[in-house]
Image (cartoon, rainbow, N blue to C red; front, side):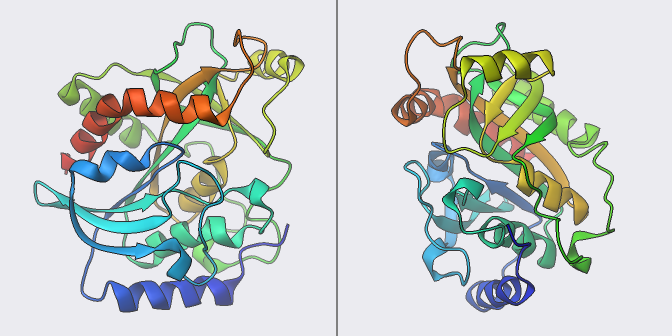
Length: 275
């Protein structure tokens, strides 16, 4: 896949700045499958459809609303990307990179990435929320491959602390404030769009995976390289293949996030309120 296209990224940024002229926030959240409803309790200042942003386009997955909203809670403003584009959609890295580019070019200092994932750790339960402490990139590609672009920092970024201690501590503090219990672990990212096989899950468990999904890692790589503080939360919407007693489906993902929504909303509201 080709690297993010610089001209398209800047076209998206110009449209963003024209639409949200004079508006600013230092926090941003990218909502994974089923997570977009967490914004329903926030004050919405202004919105922009993904389809109107050059190079971004509408998400191709149910559970992703495809809208960027500037929201406010208790005086704290936050950019909410209601949905994301995925690598398996086959449109390259540019649509995935655009939200991160907009954050990097417009003063965002903290980015919270959310997703729905399959539980690999047998100690997890469906509906659990997990702080991402590290990741394993099994996508077979990387959004930084290709000609280097200065916006993404050094040519060889260090990913040792992609999900830094400060971000993890903030999520834990928000969880205590919201009375939400959390797991923590390693997120294993595959290319998709197929669900994993039992043999793959057994191998990944041996490699240290606690949860598996098809997103988040490219955004984390780009944001961390650009100097943004990255945090991540996964919702365990099902058990991974070979652990789950029934066939995997996207319907189960959306059903579980709907049931878990009050907990997700409480956690993200508390996260936004922390200065």
